[in-house]
Image (cartoon, rainbow, N blue to C red; front, side, top):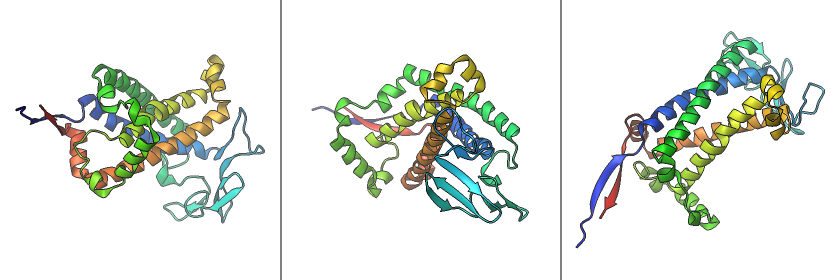
Length: 269
């Protein structure tokens, strides 16, 4: 008779935990300082050039009494939230994003750039180190690898439906990542985060002058800016879903695991 016993091991390696929290801080500051930079010209274009008289596929606009968000020809009123809002002193402001959502909380393009570029380097170096370390300790191969048979649409759909079940969410703490989680993490780590870095570099005048091929890859500086903005809000959406899953599956257990490492249990013969 073969004996079966349970073994426990760390769920999150030290390098993963450090990168997780450094990354969370960097992305928050990058988002808020990025909104300050966006406030300087709250319009997005495709191509190489963009100015007030050019057609913008997305814009946050305002006047003294009205704020709006426009996608193409569709205009949504955002008075009190975007474009036209009141600051803490009760004064009406017409910047695209309100002061509570930006770093610094007052409008300063120069200060916003300083915050953004400083934490962008920490973010980029941290991602590089995490990728190298994850390949070295086989975190990617053991925790995020997706076998060929799991790429079938039927398998993905079944995993997605299972991922929405309350009982499965509550019992997911301490278990291996399911297919939807692995797809999400792979998409964020290997697509969205590098995309943020390279589109950010493509917007740099110095990079454009010395490495114009990088800008050309994205179809121009304004296209790179649009992709950068879209990717940033895709990351915000991922963060909100991630936060919701943490709350539903037991926030104390999940936070403890990401701080102290946690454990996962497996059966060994």
